[in-house]
Image 1 (spheres, rainbow over the protein chains, first blue to last red):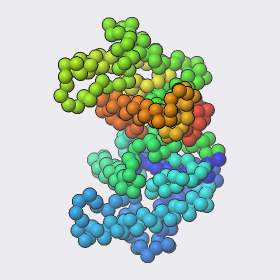
Image 2: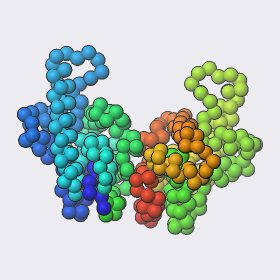
Image 3: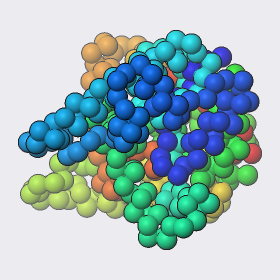
Image 4: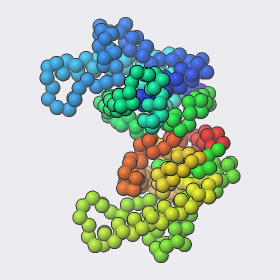
Amino acid sequence: MKKIITIAREFGACGRTVGKSLASRLGYDYWDKAIVTNGQKDSNISLSDLVEFDEKVPTNFSFGLSLFEFNNVELSNQIFRTQNEVIRRMGEHGRCVIVGRNANYILREYDSLLRVFIYADPEFRIAHMEGLKPDYTEEQMRSRLAQVDKAREKYCAYYTHSSFHDVKNYDICLDVGKLGIDTVVDVLYQLAR
Amino acid sequence: MKKIITIAREFGACGRTVGKSLASRLGYDYWDKAIVTNGQKDSNISLSDLVEFDEKVPTNFSFGLSLFEFNNVELSNQIFRTQNEVIRRMGEHGRCVIVGRNANYILREYDSLLRVFIYADPEFRIAHMEGLKPDYTEEQMRSRLAQVDKAREKYCAYYTHSSFHDVKNYDICLDVGKLGIDTVVDVLYQLAR
């Protein structure tokens, strides 16, 4: 029985839908954006900063930084540490599905952990986004997809020193566009039980 | 129903065991090293060359090549084209499990294709190798593992212009060390049916 399931996911790859459905079938808690607001209770960081730097590295961190940028890096690291604490508490409690925020890395030493990665080609993800953002043009959606993909890759590289798309960070990786949402949930449900 | 299942795999990650077991349960043909010998029937390449350059890029191909190295590159490309033909014929025929040799890339446009990647951490793979190579020391096994991993990465990069460990090359990726051989076969059997 897997007590903690982490789901890392590409933007638009239905990680939230899969995670919620899986949590519901297993009778587990479901966590994604609530990690951010829970972080606020434990720190003196404003909610707007927590949301702003959620799953992001603040700037181009590889060159000389201005004081403004340096403050942002500090803030981002502080937010990461806060989320780290929140995610560890969720892990201790167990029986939960956690989406995003490098939880697979943060909880990697835990027993009864299933680390999942969900992805799909851009066409599937754009088709899915159309339902969520009907006012976006296709060009805007493609650009948004590329932007969030890039941000998550950098976020993963910065805090875990590994690539977001590298299988070695996960126990199972599924293309939700090829396999379908229901099948992905079924496979994960069987593995968790 | 998936008619073709390709299994790319890390060295020592039991790809052969998983593939054979899956093919047997589905009543499918199983192909791995036989792709090499089938290639011989269609070409005038010697079996020893086919075996020597199987799943390898011949040398450091990025710098100036001697005539000897150039000939090896030519030979390697010719072997890749021959294996390509053999794998395409297997794909046309369908109802088969094909292990290795970039079959996921060669057959990527086919319908009813399930592209699988199987991996495990070095500890699991070394434990598995101990059964196969009882005369190797642990150091020799680690070194062999690193050597074959590197060769397969280069082979994949050279012929497909993508990374061996990138999820995007596959529909599903499974850590056989974490999930276990029987579970991996069960999941793939359910997905194929």
